[in-house]
Image (cartoon, rainbow, N blue to C red):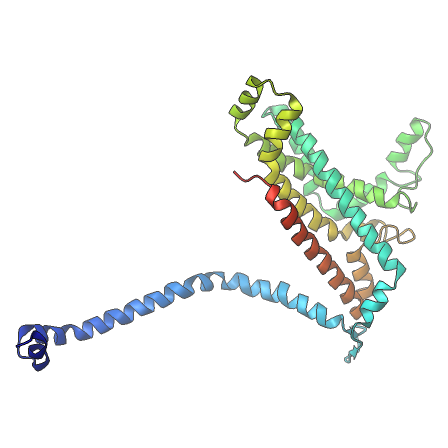
Length: 324
């Protein structure tokens, strides 16, 4: 007689054992499913607080800004008037907006180029681990830990056209004083110089760490091959610090596009709109002129600008970064 028929009748030991262990197997399967479900949702539970913060403070404001850019609203009236794309049309027809955009791009370009360049030169000079270099690194880095408000007030005094130390030094050499913050041709370069002075210490300190991480035997091999200094820098140093340079450029560009404090304190966007930037213009239209829809349109332009930079930079230059 087939064994299956015997088990079906429960006439032997095998069938009785199967019936006795069936509840245990069901419970074990249920526990395995529960454990599998918990393992599946555990990563989402862990990152849920960060996701909530991201949605509330980043994703939602972006969509809300896009929504507000389609309305005319003074921030006080309970009613918002639908105007569609009129705010964008007025914005792109405004010559002052294009000057503000040019100021923002020029400020970002020169702050990043000069700041990272001077940071690299300073880092190469201070790369050796000596007590003197440690002291100089602290001196160079110190402006970075000072608040932008304090930095702005300090440089307003230094650049004062009547009694500032900078013009006093120029006068000692027979050079006439400069209206650093009142001349439309000088105000923006002055703000760029202040920003570079503040950030170059941070850039150099990060680059010093990157330079010290390069294996020394690579330089010994270059010396054995009679490679000159420029070839060694171009073939060994630059490729191995390229991830750090990549990081600094991205961070400095984003920070420069968001510049606000120094302009608010030192120039208020003047003279003649020479130092106005997108973020400060957004603040003016939103909270001083009560044109929320127009300010939201400026914010959308800034968002698109940062998005274009991020995509272009990662697409064009990310493949040139050498990660070890």
